[in-house]
Every structure is written in structure tokens, then in C-alpha cells.
Length: 539
Ligand code: SF4
Ligand code: SF4
Image (cartoon, rainbow, N blue to C red):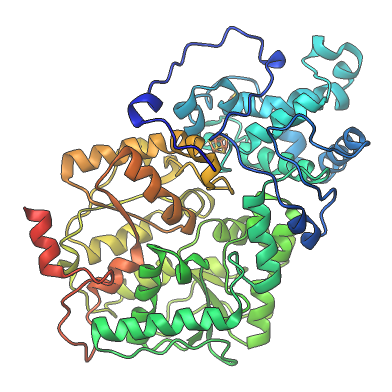
């Protein structure tokens, strides 16, 4: 069992004094709470990945294949030839240090190998040794490093202490994207069977049943039916939630946590209310019942295959375009990789809102519209009747989830919606939001319990900014548009900033939405009495 993390007052004692030891000679110490467990052999077998076996990172013998070193170097060579960005990022860093203090893991741990520049140097030194002339001749003198088992273990430890959030890249004058380097190293580690269960089990489940949790179609339907019944109790309105309906105009895809997790589920209720109210011709799919793509945390090939599933289902159902929910990495894959990996989705139509007539030209290639784009367009065109006072029990702030913010530039739409559904919206400090947003500390497959200390350390900068608005404005709800944020920020906030809950934007839309034929609302979608909650907050 994972041990409880140290108390906040202990964990916050962080010394940034430079380490005295030579970083090249410091071995990784796999301390409890700071790493993820290995992937179960059954998941490797399911995904057809090499070297399935029982092992754990804290054990001395990782049971690597005998030719592991050749496999990694061959994999590196292939990727240096295939990905121009990889070779570029290996070559152009001038070690200016602008990125050094921008990573939440460095800020929360003071471990120099969590500086993005040094994190990248862990592989760059191997690149120099084996793939540059100077390194092949002068080795260590040219900054090269032998690839040893200790180096491999170091890669595993530190490239699974990177959430691929890309904050560092915002500050790099050369645009070096450490997240891309992390993705490449994880892909290399996969070649010799070094991977984590928290990444591969959801991926295996997704291949098997269509979603991370491995829920089968009847379980998926039960969950949606339950939500419909619950909404009727709250609003008096019976909504429809079609599943696998061929010929619908729109396929709606969300992260599976929206069906099965809390507080995600309240966001799902908001979507259902919205779609009913505007009469959207849409369908869910029990097979594309997951927008999240853990392939992004594992390999390009897996990312491509998981993304393809959504589009195959859109084709099968004969929809015109896809609407996507509040998810993080689904959007990074769709916006940054899909066109080159899966090709443009030419069999779908350029999305046009059937309610407002707005043509989403930004989605011309992907044919996929973000729910915040869709809803803000509805509000802008006066298509929704909203009563923001129904959210008066919440003092709200907004956490820009890394991928929608940095990977797709979705900065204004969530704020526009929030200002229309809430009377009390407060921004966190400028250098912690929008493109400069701080990661939750648990993305990219790091959100497991055994990794709790490192998650809390990584979550400290975000929590610190939340504390600022809690103490100054009484903020008691952090909203976000990512399923991983919704799953992991409650733990980080409870630890660092008690009294602040986590919710989705469309949860607040659902609260504020005045539906035709509704009964008098006495509760929010969480089932909390509106008046009673106000009384508590005002007390
Ligand atoms: S991508 Fe994010 S987690 Fe990774 S090194 Fe950069 S700032 Fe740190
Ligand atoms: S900011 Fe860019 S160039 Fe400067 S050290 Fe970091 S990665 Fe290298």
C-alpha cells in the first residue's frame, strides 16, 4: 500500500540550494511516493508490447532483454531520422536556463533533474555520445554519456516526472518542447518493456471496450440512463440521451470519467440539459465511449490507433461532425497530431452549428468542435436563457487545463461562458493562467496513488495560486475542462488549499440554464439545496 504523504508543512520545506554532486554520477533513489508502478504483464500482452514480465522499479533487476541497449540505440536512430523535431531539440539547446524554474516539478521538489533543461540533458548526453562525431571521439569530454542501466532507470524516473504539460516550452527562446522529448523517451522505454501500469491499463481497456475503465456497453448505457433519471428529479424535465443512433447529425465524445467519476459526472448532467434545451440532433457511442487518449503518454503508434477509433465510429454512425467534451489530452492529439497521423477526416463535413449557423472554420480539417466553442457561440447568439444567480453559492476561479490552453489556444471561450453563468468569477495571478498555466501535477499518466508525494509536489504551484484567490476573494470552486484535472486536483487542493472544490464549466451551465417546462429548481446538479448552500457560504 502507498504510504501517506508527509504533512503540507513538511513537504513545503524545499531547499533550492544547488546540489554539490555531479549530476552524471547521481543514481536514482526510488523513494516511495515518488514513482509509478510497472505495467502488469497482461496489459503488455494485450497491447502486443515487448517483454511482458513481473518487475518493479524499486527492484535492482529490471529483467531487461539481453539486447536492451542495442534496441534503445536502434530505436533512437530511427526516431532521429523520422522526427525532425527530435533531432532539432537534441541539437539546439544553448543551456540559457530560461526554462529551469518554469516546471512545477522543479518548483515543488527542487530536484535539479526536474529542470526541463536537465531533464532533456538526460537523453541529450546519450545522443551526443552515440550520434555526434564529437561524442563518438571524445565521449565525456564532449558532454556524452554511456547508455547504462542506471541511465535507463534515470530516464524512467524523470520522464515519468514530466506531465508533458509544455509550460517550459512557452519560455524557451528556441521553442524547445520538452514534452516532445518526454514522449520520445517513453516510446524508447516501451521498446524494452519499461512502462507504467497507470498508462497501459487504461490504454488496454480502451482497446478492449472503448474506454479507460473497461466498462462494457451495457454498463455505459446504465450510467447514462441513471443520469437521465437523476436530471428528471432535479429539473422535472425528461431529457433524451441517444446512444449509437445512426444518422444523427453530431457524434458527442467525452472522457469516460464524465460517466463514472465525481465531480466529472456533474459536467455530464450539464451537457445533457444543454443538448435537450437546444434540441441538438446528436448521439453518444458505446464504442467511442472515451475521448481520452493514453497513447499520447506511451507511443505515437498507440496514440494514432486510439484516435482512429473515434473517427471510425463517426463513419459507422454516419454523422456529419464530432462534438468533443471537457477533456485535456484528447484535444492535444486532435489538434496537434491527428492530421499527420490519421489524415484529414474528409468523410465528415465542416462543422456548422445547427442552432446558430456558425461555421467552425478552425475545425475544417479535424471536423471536431470543442464543447466550449459550441456553448460560447450559443450564448453569444442569445440562444440560451441563463440565470447566473443559481451559481451564487460558488465563488469561481478557472484553471486553464494545459492541453486546451497551450495545445489549442482555448483561452477565451471558457471565460466567456463562466462570466455568463456565474456572478462571482475571479482570475488567479496572470503568470499562472492562460498560456502560462500551471499543470495539476498529475497529467500524462502520473495520477496514481503510489505516486502521491510527487503529485502533491507538482501540484504545489497551481495550489498556491488557488490559495491566493481563496484567501483574497473567498473562492470555493475551481473550474476546469480536463478529466485528469477533475480527478486529481481535488486531492491536491484538499491537501494544500482546503475548502476549494473542483468542477466543470458545463456543470455551472447546467445550474444556470433555464429549461422550458422545468419545475422550480431547489438544488444544483450536485443535489445541494441552493438556499441552504448560500446560507452556509454566507455564514
Ligand atoms: S513539459 Fe511540463 S512537466 Fe515536462 S519539463 Fe516541461 S514544464 Fe516540466
Ligand atoms: S530555455 Fe530552451 S534553450 Fe534555454 S535551456 Fe531551456 S530548453 Fe535550452
